[in-house]
Length: 157
Image 1: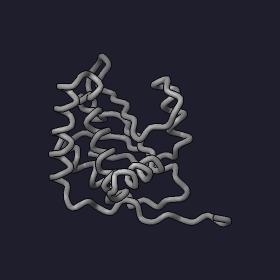
Image 2: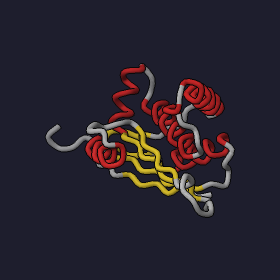
Image 3: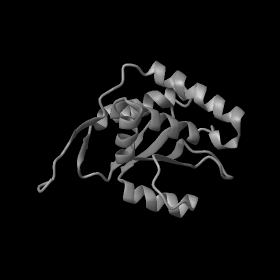
C-alpha cells in the first residue's frame, strides 16, 4: 500500500499524513486495500491544461482520474492517478455550504471510484450506482479529517 502524493500548490499547506490516510481508507472501502495510487494537488491553470490535453475541454475541472487498469496487460498494484484542483474544491465548498475538507473527501472518493471502474458518464444507472457508493464511503469516513491547513498569504495580498 502506497500513496504517492505531490502538491503543486504554493498558497496552501496540506496535512499530507491525513490526506494519505484518507486515500488509504477510501481504497479499503472501495474494496482495494492493497492498491497504490498517485495523487496530485494542483491549481486551476494546471487543471485546465490537463483537462484540455486529455479530455479536449478548454476549462478547469475539480477532479481527473487516469486509471492504469483499463488497458491490456497484467495488472499492477498501481491503480492510476487522481488529480484534484484545490482552488476548485474551495469554490465548490463555498457554493455547497460545507468545508473544503469535506469537498476534498468527496473529490478524492470520486476520483478513486473512477480508478476502480465506476463511471457516472456511462448512463443514469451507473451514475446512481457510483453516487450510492460515494455516499456510503463518505459516511464511513466521518468525521471529516483536517486536510487543508491554512491559506498562506502572499506578500501584496
